[in-house]
Amino acid sequence: MRTIAAVAVVGALAVGGYYARRRLSAKPPEPAVRAAVRVGPIEETVDATGSVLPYHRVEIKPMMSGRIEKLLVDEGDKVAQGQIIAWMSSTDRAAILDGARAQGPEMLKKWEDTYKATPVIAPLPGVIILKNVVEGQTVDATTVVYAMSDVLVVVAQVDESDIGKIHLGMPVSVVLDSYPDRTEQGTVFDILNEGKNVSNVIQYSVKIRLRRVPSYYRSEMSANVSFVVDRHPKALLVPAAAIQDKDGVSSVLVAGPDGTRRRRIVKVGLRTDSDAEIVSGLSAADAVLVISAKYVPQEEPKSSPLSMGSFKKSDAGQRKAGH
Image (tube, rainbow, N blue to C red; front, side, top):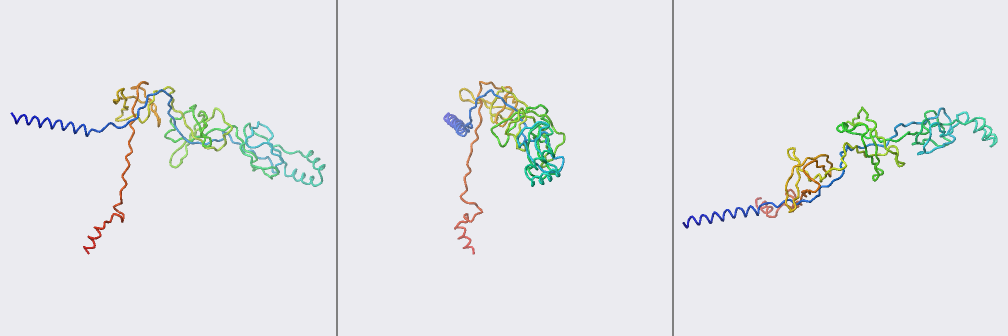
């Protein structure tokens, strides 16, 4: 009987020790940050880069060789179709006026009235984007006097992997590198059919018409473009880092009122780098846990095994004795 009792005591101690060791060796739960489920907007976008460019760029050249007498507009000025933007003299008139000028102001006035200057006309309504000459400059029929644009648009370069998501009328947000705190809205109005190979990536040009063209927009400015593929204004949102995807199933850690944790399967809609939309599985009253990864600093080795510092004096003595 004593033997049986001793065995029972030893067994009880062993079992108790096993569970004690198990409790001591059990890992504490990973630290996590509590995040409330919130309602807000979320959108899926395709991001691209582009430039501000004239929709129609027109170079204005003189009809003849001669000399620019008067420039009437500057860069940035709006002009109407048919407006006189400069006066010029033909080569013959310039020569006659130069000769008359040497004979005095009365003779110069006579020939200026007799031999009229030739106007340079704006061919369409728009904005002057380039003034390429100065008054008194000699020009010919190939000289660009002005360049003008009817309207500025944004042309974005979209990779072929994303071009299937782009369609006419799609809303777009545009931010210029020069003005990162200002966002303009627009829509897609043209998608070019011919792509270009840029660093072994095929890109397609997509043209965007802005709702309004601000005064600070200039031709050739660099732009960051976001095409809004889908947008939900009142979505149930959690931090994207709270979602765990495994074997095609998405789940989150739900925080209990007593500090407990339980994993719950959810259906996820739109995602961004920061947020994820929960279609089902959670309510606005829930809170989720985001596991905060620990950073474990690596211990710096005292010396590299390849460095001269690792060569011990005892080793040196042994080698010397070996010799």
